[in-house]
Amino acid sequence: MNNSIMVVDDERNILNSLFRVFKMEGYNVLMAESGKAGLELLRHNSVAVVISDYRMPDMDGVEFLNNVKGIAPDTVRFMLTGYADTKAVISAINTGEVYRFVTKPWDDGELKSAIHAAVERFNLVEENRRLAELTKRQNALLVEVNQGLEAKVEEKTKKIREGFFSFVGLYGDIIELHDRYIGGHSKRVASTTKGLASAMGMAAPDVDLVWAAALLHNIGLVGVPREVLDAEEDGLSESEKALFRNNPALSQEIVSKIGMLRQVGVVIRSHMEHFDGRGYPDGLKKEEIHPGARIISVCKAYDSLRHRRPAMPHSDALAKIESERGRMFDPAVVDAFIGYAADIKDDSTDDQASASSVVMPVGVAGLKPGMVLAKDLTTSKGRLLVTKGTEFSEALIEKVRNFNRIDPISGPVHVLIQPAC
Image (cartoon, rainbow, N blue to C red; front, side):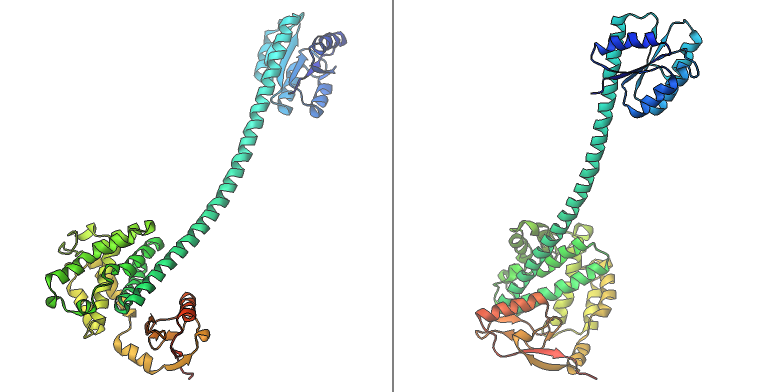
């Protein structure tokens, strides 16, 4: 707390009198016999209250207090005068912003009370300023800390998300191990869906969502007999047809048991809805169908056409997709898919690529990211690990090596390489 008072007067007896009054009250009293001396003291001392005489040689009280305001604006300013000078009062108020006038002779009790209130006022202003500055610094620090925390949370969330979708990918691998046809179809549909969704400008988190939905959309069919899966729809019984019609809802139920996959389940449920409302299980139409499900619907149909027996050529499959525009499929998705499908290889292109490649056997230890599997990879117990045509990633290589420790792979791994020109 600041309890310093400055008294400025050219009369020494006034100075001594005020010094005695306030020293007895416990104040630190500074004295100056001129405005110039008072300003010099003020530059080197923090003062709560200044009491200045009005009439002083060289620099009157108005000019002095005006200078005090410039040096120490929070210091409370008193004017001491023995003259009933209205102009002086007005000038002091307008120029020096005087807090209070004290006339000579003064009443000690009233003056003490006024000075005490002024000192409290000064210290309150100073404390408010100190707290405001402290709050400002703390807020700046909090902003900095929050920015750091947000960056860390964002990075952590990204890692968790990446780890989670790696788990989803592993789930797809497990489906493929259980049923290579369902797994292979789901992986191809997921890959095409991801590419098409990105090409259509879908945000990255939404692309991950529809990719996961495409990868897991047939999980409800795992366990359905192979002869039922391979049969044409016309040759199925009503109970067998019901297995397929129940798949979207069952697949949703299965994946929704994992909290982070609930939205994925919503997309899966509507992937067999038709744009014109004739699909299942809920008879949704147009924009009622999730955008991701509309994309999966087209990609799924294309893959089924291209890989069923007998397989439909690329151009015929595109024509079939085009023929369902506005009925089974969203026209906007069909248009986007037709453009995207220009980068999808036809059978002849695949054959040419295979013909120009050389099959090379390598050991499990020799697998490298980017290698393409030339033959299905199985273990000595007949377990299918990876299907032909799969490109190895670091994660897939690690999975193969782990399986090899438990159930050794039968023979070498056959991969495709391009011969040197």
